[in-house]
Image: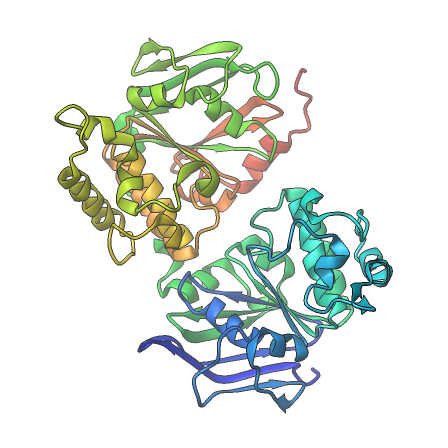
Length: 507
């Protein structure tokens, strides 16, 4: 193997006496995709911000690029050293063109005026190399998220970067955009670029990673070569416990047999969902699986009244019920956890206390509509304790929490309504491994308490790990059902066979 392009040795960082990194080492080679993994708070972002110049490390460590010690002062120093970072929240100016964004901070001028034509001409070959389907003169505001990722990468290549850091790059991308990004990342690796890839998604690490380095609590746990990359090994390194305790499943689904809580019969919207029927029993966790576009979320929206149905009806505990709005669903005891917690679920600028109590404000009001703050505070404190929400206090804004803690705040809002049915749409999307395990434990405890739970997830190991039964959708219809048995465990092959089935489904 050639000499490393990057060596970080003994890098430490403290903030006001709190240790964020303690003597971390990282070695990266040119032409490799090096995955960096760890729970939220493990130190990944801090380490990368030190490398890119956003933070200064504590004295004592060393950073070498191409064998030479470097002292990186500020983001400009990071760029000068050949390091570019693409953050999860893209840093593009939407009101500027593609060329202007690529040159931002390094503009070309002639006689005091921006040489826009020259800039567009110079970035053209880079966009062509990346296979971009837009022009240098296109406003970034008119681009999709996948196209904006290309602009960020083009900016890094234009700056002649040697090391590219990508932080959760697929969070806002569709499946197709993600696949195109993966192909481009592999192309850049083949061209000799060193790529540090931060992700919580195991499938992405399997698909892309040449090596994996894991951090936990600000320390280096270790690194794995491609042949050693396994889910159980990585989980053990990240959370410090065996993978066998990852999917907590102590509830007994047979305890609720004969007690249907939610029954959906022949549900359809005339477009994406056609003739779908399913039942969820008390104390049972049912998975709703299928490929992207199969109609899973659309079916959930019909159940909770978030979209109008053209056919079908609902029964709740054996009685017909008409639900026209999500509010009516919540009042009836059907709670829905949205897949997009930031845009559709949480109020990020509001406190955790207020977010948790939003669903029961009317229930707590007294004296003509005055909110009972003591009751609201007690409820939020109980939620923090029972769900393990990690924050200084309930008054902190929801937007300042990690993804896993945000998800638990949103979940606690729903649980405050004491639902009979809980529909969870991608409940662990964008959260780290430790938070996933905690959410699985919460789901298991709710099932033990008798809640009927429907889980929509694109993560097949998750579906297999926590569900008692899996209903599979394909092309807007129920393709089949698989039940867990003592001698017949759930498996990905059976689920995918139904999701992709070779038989024709009538239009």
